[in-house]
Amino acid sequence: MADKHLDAKGLNCPLPILKAKKALKDMQPGQILSVEATDPGSAKDFESFCTQTGNKMVKASENGDVFYYEIEKC
Image (cartoon, rainbow, N blue to C red; front, top):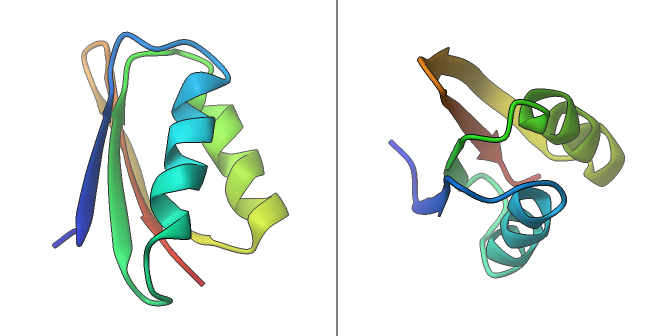
C-alpha cells in the first residue's frame, strides 16, 4: 500500500514528473508514492525519471486512459 498518493490526471509533461519529484522529496527511503496520470507519455517519462533519480518503479499499469505508477523512494 502506498504511503502517499499523487493525482496527476489532466496534467501534461513535465507537470506529473515535477509533482512526483516534489512529493518524493518529503518522503523517507522505502516509502511508496502512487501516481495516477492521463498523459500518454508519462510511462516513458516516469521510467526515465526513476532511472535518473535512483528511485524504483515498483509497479506500472494502465486502465483505459489512466496510467498508474508506484514508485519506491530509494
